[in-house]
Amino acid sequence: MLDPVSRVRRFNRAVTSAVGALDSSFLGRGRPLGAARVLNAIGHGRSDVAEIRDYLGLDSGLMSRLLRSLEDEGLVETTTHEDDARRRVATLTRVGRREFAAYEALSNTQAEGFLDRHSQRDALLAAMDMVASALTRDRVALAEMDPKSEQARYCLGAYYSELGRRFKQGFDVSLSRDPDAKDMRRMRGTFIVAMSDTLPIGCVGLKGTDHGYAEIKRLWVAPAARGLRLGRRLMDAAEDAARELGIRLLRLDTNSALSEAGQLYRTTGWHEIPRFNDDPYPDLFFEKRI
Amino acid sequence: MLDPVSRVRRFNRAVTSAVGALDSSFLGRGRPLGAARVLNAIGHGRSDVAEIRDYLGLDSGLMSRLLRSLEDEGLVETTTHEDDARRRVATLTRVGRREFAAYEALSNTQAEGFLDRHSQRDALLAAMDMVASALTRDRVALAEMDPKSEQARYCLGAYYSELGRRFKQGFDVSLSRDPDAKDMRRMRGTFIVAMSDTLPIGCVGLKGTDHGYAEIKRLWVAPAARGLRLGRRLMDAAEDAARELGIRLLRLDTNSALSEAGQLYRTTGWHEIPRFNDDPYPDLFFEKRI
DNA sequence: CGCCACCTCTGACTAAAGTCAGAGATATGC
DNA sequence: GCATATCTCTGACTTTAGTCAGAGGTGGCG
Image 1 (cartoon, chains in turn orange, cyan, red, blue):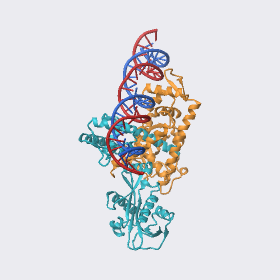
Image 2: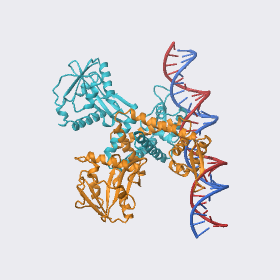
Image 3: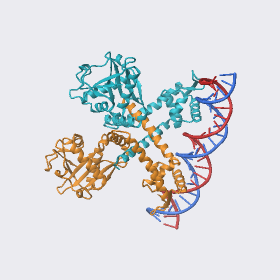
Image 4: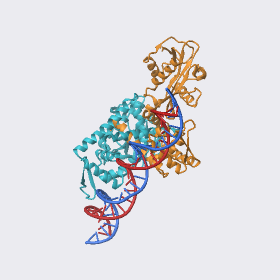
């Protein structure tokens, strides 16, 4: 009843029945689940037939038939791919977009209804983020993004507000040496975001300098994603990028209040060096030759 | 991407694919999912055929055939119900129990594997408890239980350790007026536990006294279950039980550090009264006429 | 150009799940 | 005791999902 494995299994039972309910609400629109899934995949912007097939794990014969049935309903049109006439591209018709919107409304209403009934929304959402991140850990994708992109800005905002919570004296970006976005773009550096499905759950910046080293900046892992060893993955990716750019020496600064980070650096080949900048926030400085 | 509804929907996508994986691991034993589900329902103690059918949401014809196929495999035996010869009762054979154990092992290994890969186990489990409680809130069952039962003792242990965390001076049961179990049993009082599936998520005690009133004691809601308005449900159930027992006046003591509790009492017809005992921990005293 | 790889589609299947009506046995209420 | 309801089971379906082989067109490369 109370051991960890039973708790996981209780969770499994709870979500199995919830998923069942979700599926059957989708059947309410008079279309088999398979066809509904294809329609929704197209609605969410997947247009290449092979990509949809892959995403939904369908056999090519089955996929073809499902697509045909959606065409017969007048929801979908297929054309051949511009660059490769073997491939087909599916798009929603006007009617199809309306039908897709109806599915979206169903999902949104369901989600809102679930949240509205709960009076500790933020805690519940945080728990859902954590579980979802753990369940999809193998599908977390690291991608280089512009440091001004929406995803990157979300990560940085979350990072700053976390520093504000964890530093006794709070945190004010304007007092810190906020790295210039252009130093975290190729070919000077890069900015990497970890995406779990549509949610950014971590980031790291590699900031080029003119002093013979590059700096690691803004390493952040969302609270919901801690425990997935994502910090290490992000650091590895940043180092790989640095090597690609011909960088041989890395430095970083951090604060002893961020104990997990210090722990990570110490166990991955970094060693402490004396202060190398006058930023007021950091009190620990590291270097690594790669 | 970042609004609450998207986060819920990301969670839905994550669990949908996880549930799919869980289902297909069950197919590994060479039996269709329907038959495996029936076998497992029987293994988990559901024996009445109508009850299983209801639980799994199956048509009676389908249920009958699935049961027949399990009988043909030699896994299940059916007999007629003792009290009602129309009903049938299914039990596992020796082979059936072995097969059920294999499914159990599969589930347990899967759950352990999931936990083992995560380095923040406790946080993850707490999150899973919270999500599971929210998803199954309509199936939370309040049941009167003996205050010495395993479930009750679990709740009380969790309650005491939470008081220890929340009171500045900590909490030591032996210093408090720990209610005698026999005062929280019918006909003097009662003890109610809220069960979500197999997990106790809340409790409340009604303690009979010889002073013309009964006391509400040990109101506790698991952190994972907060936001479900379970405190109110438990209090209502305790009041109902008090009425049944002919009790007209209720009292309780609490501590101002437990702000949610105080809030609940004030909004549900209780009013503050002077201290009526010498317990060192409470600093707030309430009364309610029912 | 020829060959091979690749994508999509169709035909021909199977398995699993689910539906529906009705038969047969048994319980329940008047 | 009889009508009616309830439970299980069987037969006869349908729908959905999924598999497999092969046809026919296209792309890429020597």
